[in-house]
Length: 227
Image 1 (cartoon, rainbow, N blue to C red):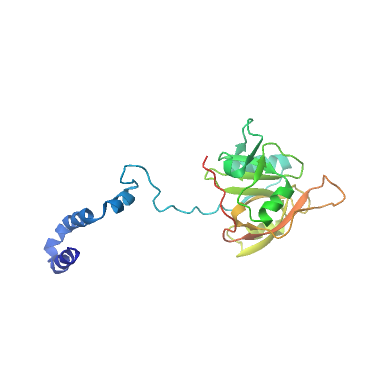
Image 2 (image 1 turned 90 degrees about the vertical axis):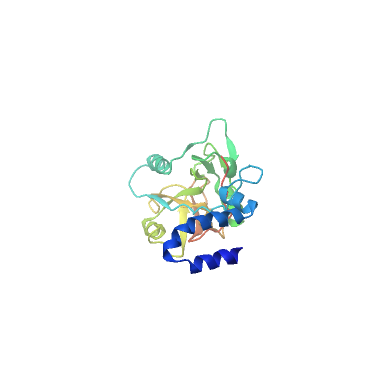
């Protein structure tokens, strides 16, 4: 049947091309029911199906290149990313279970373990458990950004338009003279081979710095939640 239709189309004069629509209808009628169902997004029984799922692109690095206090810079970044504090009823949660459009905090040691072992999930807390905890944003599409502070020299390298294939970054938990600029980097593009370190080993309350690679492609399994 397909050969007959093909020969008809090949030898048809130009004035008969208007019949092409009819041929399309005939071809559609010959398609198996399962293929028609897949194209329409429904199963033969009428239920909804997942048709060719699309992999979401990782979010871009977000930078607030402006002066300000730590609290003010964090507010600006949260506003730019469209995130709000976790609900009062959620004191602790996994990133995968957190609602989209929210932010939480993670202790440096747990963040380090997650990135070094390439864990697909993170344990978040609504209230920062320490002054050196890292902030994590869960965007509206479910992707995650890790918040920290950088120096000007590294800041220019992580900008999406200027970043090379991979760049070594030092992400500080809090601002300092060395790292005054706040940034948010995509979690799925981070690869670590060492744990975070305190900037002053003798001071248990000192800020923490985490050295890792920011890569051009995803390195970790996505932890997108369904909420």
